[in-house]
Image (cartoon, rainbow, N blue to C red; front, side):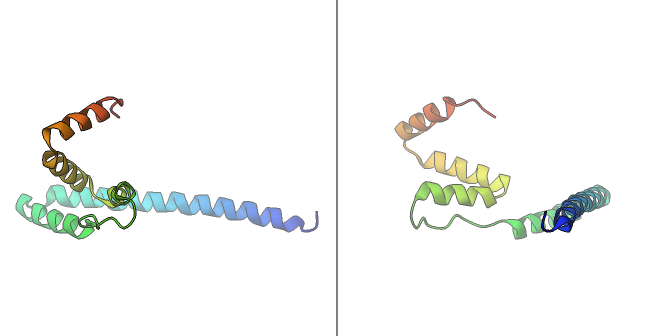
Length: 115
């Protein structure tokens, strides 16, 4: 081996990285638990206002008009959207389809097993 210390350094870096990931996970869990406790102990009206405001700030907003491929653009947007946004846009889009298109869509999605 030309550089025997290189392997030892790489192993140390991997262990350090795994330790960082574990510390990050622990901190995120502690913050999430703290947030949950604060919400549970907050006046319900205040908690609703604070959570609504926070969720609104996290939203990516409406999908952008497709530049190249509408399906690719929709997939990209859906990766960033909140679960509520995905459900809202899905339902609104489905309701905007003609009855024939709705039937075709339902046939397509019912052909796959639900997750």
